[in-house]
Image (cartoon, rainbow, N blue to C red):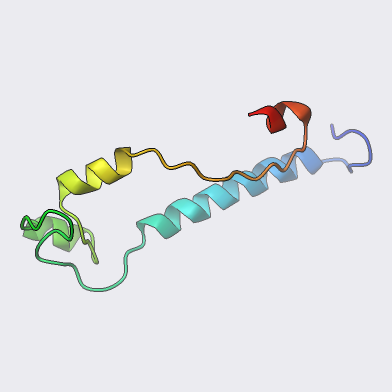
Length: 89
Protein backbone atom coordinates (compact mmCIF):
# COMPACT_ATOMS: atom_id res chain seq x y z
CA UNK A 1 0.00 0.00 0.00
CA UNK A 2 2.70 2.47 -0.91
CA UNK A 3 1.55 5.78 -2.28
CA UNK A 4 2.95 8.39 -4.61
CA UNK A 5 6.04 7.34 -6.52
CA UNK A 6 6.89 4.44 -4.19
CA UNK A 7 6.53 0.91 -5.49
CA UNK A 8 4.34 -1.74 -3.90
CA UNK A 9 5.80 -3.15 -0.71
CA UNK A 10 7.98 -0.11 -0.02
CA UNK A 11 6.44 0.47 3.41
CA UNK A 12 7.12 -3.13 4.44
CA UNK A 13 10.70 -2.82 3.24
CA UNK A 14 11.15 0.35 5.29
CA UNK A 15 9.79 -1.34 8.41
CA UNK A 16 12.02 -4.38 7.90
CA UNK A 17 15.07 -2.15 7.35
CA UNK A 18 14.35 -0.21 10.55
CA UNK A 19 13.99 -3.41 12.58
CA UNK A 20 17.15 -4.85 11.04
CA UNK A 21 19.14 -1.70 11.87
CA UNK A 22 17.97 -1.76 15.47
CA UNK A 23 18.78 -5.46 15.88
CA UNK A 24 22.29 -4.89 14.53
CA UNK A 25 22.77 -1.97 16.92
CA UNK A 26 21.63 -4.05 19.89
CA UNK A 27 23.88 -6.98 18.96
CA UNK A 28 26.88 -4.69 18.56
CA UNK A 29 26.24 -3.14 21.96
CA UNK A 30 26.26 -6.52 23.73
CA UNK A 31 29.41 -7.74 22.05
CA UNK A 32 32.35 -7.11 24.33
CA UNK A 33 35.92 -7.71 23.31
CA UNK A 34 38.95 -8.51 25.38
CA UNK A 35 39.59 -9.87 28.82
CA UNK A 36 37.28 -9.07 31.71
CA UNK A 37 38.54 -6.79 34.43
CA UNK A 38 38.71 -8.10 38.00
CA UNK A 39 37.68 -4.70 39.39
CA UNK A 40 35.14 -2.17 38.11
CA UNK A 41 36.56 0.56 35.88
CA UNK A 42 34.41 3.21 37.61
CA UNK A 43 34.07 2.37 41.30
CA UNK A 44 36.98 -0.08 41.74
CA UNK A 45 34.73 -2.71 43.41
CA UNK A 46 35.52 -6.33 42.64
CA UNK A 47 33.53 -7.83 39.78
CA UNK A 48 32.18 -11.28 40.78
CA UNK A 49 33.77 -14.25 39.01
CA UNK A 50 30.40 -15.51 37.73
CA UNK A 51 29.74 -12.14 36.03
CA UNK A 52 33.17 -12.20 34.39
CA UNK A 53 32.51 -15.72 33.09
CA UNK A 54 28.99 -14.89 31.89
CA UNK A 55 30.00 -11.71 30.05
CA UNK A 56 33.48 -11.92 28.51
CA UNK A 57 35.13 -8.51 28.38
CA UNK A 58 33.03 -6.96 31.16
CA UNK A 59 34.48 -3.73 32.56
CA UNK A 60 31.81 -2.58 35.04
CA UNK A 61 30.22 -4.03 38.17
CA UNK A 62 26.46 -4.62 38.18
CA UNK A 63 25.63 -1.37 39.99
CA UNK A 64 27.68 0.83 37.65
CA UNK A 65 26.31 -0.98 34.59
CA UNK A 66 22.74 -0.45 35.80
CA UNK A 67 23.42 3.26 36.31
CA UNK A 68 24.88 3.54 32.82
CA UNK A 69 21.99 1.60 31.24
CA UNK A 70 19.45 3.77 33.06
CA UNK A 71 20.98 7.03 31.86
CA UNK A 72 19.12 8.62 28.96
CA UNK A 73 21.10 8.74 25.76
CA UNK A 74 19.63 10.73 22.93
CA UNK A 75 20.52 9.30 19.58
CA UNK A 76 19.55 10.41 16.17
CA UNK A 77 16.96 8.28 14.50
CA UNK A 78 16.63 7.71 10.83
CA UNK A 79 13.55 9.23 9.30
CA UNK A 80 12.92 6.66 6.60
CA UNK A 81 9.37 7.73 6.06
CA UNK A 82 9.78 11.45 5.63
CA UNK A 83 6.24 12.21 6.74
CA UNK A 84 5.33 15.42 8.49
CA UNK A 85 4.34 13.57 11.69
CA UNK A 86 7.66 11.76 11.99
CA UNK A 87 9.58 15.01 11.50
CA UNK A 88 7.76 16.72 14.35
CA UNK A 89 9.01 14.26 16.98
